[in-house]
Image 1 (cartoon, one colour):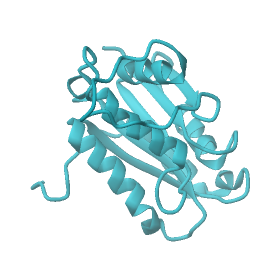
Image 2 (image 1 turned 180 degrees about the vertical axis):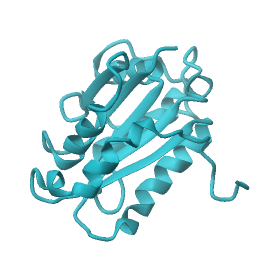
Image 3 (image 1 turned 30 degrees about the vertical axis):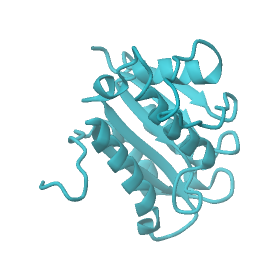
Length: 194
C-alpha cells in the first residue's frame, strides 16, 4: 500500500506554530508519499453524540464528518497537529477523536480493524520550556493508538507562543527533518510489558 499521510490540523488560528512545524516535517517525506491536509476550523465537526445505548450510528455521506471519516480510513499515517491547550489537544481535535467512538460503532465501517497496523503521529507546539508538560497529550495519543492496535511514531514537540515562534526552535526543526523517517513501534498501554 502506498503511504498516505493525513494531517489533521486542530489549531484555532491558521498557520499556527504546530502547523508550521508539521509542514517542516512533511517537507522531508518522499515525493511519492501522498499528503492530505484537513483544517478542522475550515471543516468543523458537529458535537459528538453518543448513541451506543440508543441506536445505531449511520455512516455520514456528506459534510465535514464524511470528509474526515473517509480521509481517516484512507490514511496509512495519521498526524494529529494540535497546539498544547491546557496540557492536551485543542477542543476541535478532541471532538475529532470523540467521533472515532461513533465510527467504531458505525455498521460497514469496521473502523478498528481498518486502523489496526496504521501509524499515528503527533505534532504540537507548546509555550513552555519543559516538554514534560505535554505528557498528557502524548499519553492520550499513545493510548488511543494502543486501543486501535496502531503503531505510534511519537509526538514532535516545538516551542512557540507568538505566531512563527516555533521557527526559532532550532532543536525542533532539526528533529522535524527525521521525524517521519523513524520506525514507529506498535503502541502499547502503560500497563503492557515492553
